[in-house]
Image (cartoon, rainbow, N blue to C red; front, side, top):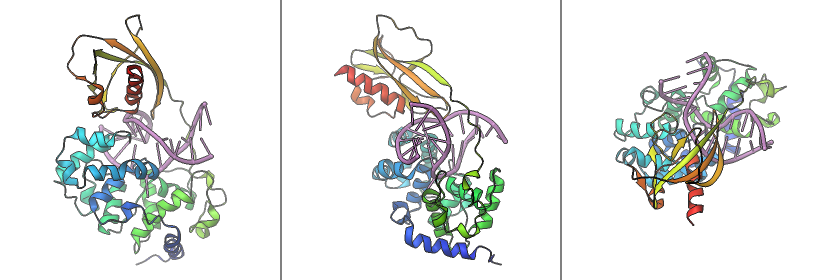
Length: 322
DNA sequence: TACCCGTGGGT
DNA sequence: TACCCAAGGGT
């Protein structure tokens, strides 16, 4: 039995999408499950602008099919992901490409079992690629739900219940896409435009939308001071591949704590790099050494996947070499 | 559950 | 500037 309670809102949403929907987004103009899935992974905790302008087309140019991803080494996928962040996404993408042999399953239940695909991404791919009528629960939907139901704080289980309560089971594709468009353009976390919102008539939070959700107290980010030591022999430089969780699989210059600079080293400069849970304050030094295992010329380093911090260090090195 | 995981946009 | 936070998932 269909709930009639939100019929008006569902109708408003269809109208709003016709007039304002971001219908030109490339992942809304393809039936390719891979192209839709790739967009969903890239867009996790990442703004549309970044994915659209710097990564999505470039990645598809390099890997036109999921099978193409499966056929290369994970390092090649990481290189294509360089600069996008959250590199576990790239490693899971590669893993999923291999496990599925380049053919994604066509339903949310099977999709969610794959590495890097949680419930929301599974629902998104199932809905957008296979027309399965399931709600999504991304940051946009969450903010709308908090405000629409005037909920200050709750867990994901409760949010999923609200998502299921509100979504349009008959026009799920447009509903889900519109939720993200409205969250991005109308129900923004600052300065929401309630008077033009399709939800306005029944929104319980419209009088004071900034109350929802309740802000969590932030902790101040600690600072890590490190010395990036670029060991070299003549024109070849030492890098190693990260094996810890942070930046796993990416190549990096050696980092030292409490490193004493002396006359045998050349100071190349300093920089800051902001991570989610700390700020790196790095000073970069150049130091000659005996031959080691992984030596690279500048040109070879450009073919390795580096983090933002190591790319800054590399830039300082290149300035020094000029 | 709380924490970890990158980078850049927007204010 | 400093801060919040973005088409979340893994552990």
